[in-house]
Image 1: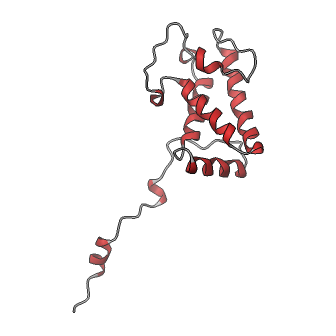
Image 2: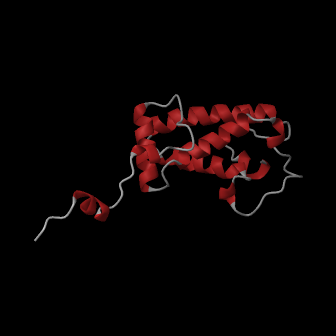
Image 3: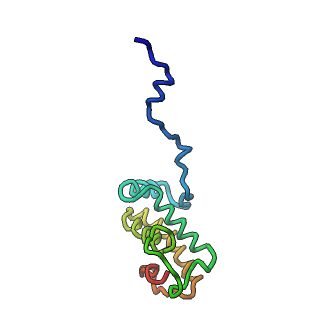
Length: 143
């Protein structure tokens, strides 16, 4: 029986994508230790989709550093019923809160520090939002 050509053998194999095709659309969260990043990756693998924490952190940082018109007045803002679309920034903050509660203590402390810095920046810039402490879930009602 004649031997098959190597190209015919390769055609039958499934295509394996290299790392070039798996680029993350959102930048990684800076100022986190390697252990914290590993805990987040492990948690995303078990409970969430890969990259969702980076996406949520990026959207929350964009809200904190972006123009003031993005911090909408809760009385005039219109939002759809699909939280994943991005028009409700509270969805991303809820995801970060869920991740912070699921991480080990030290890793959660690192991420919490970065998120609370963004929270305080949002609260300083927006005159309409009232929050008495960082523990109050202010982003659900007032964003």
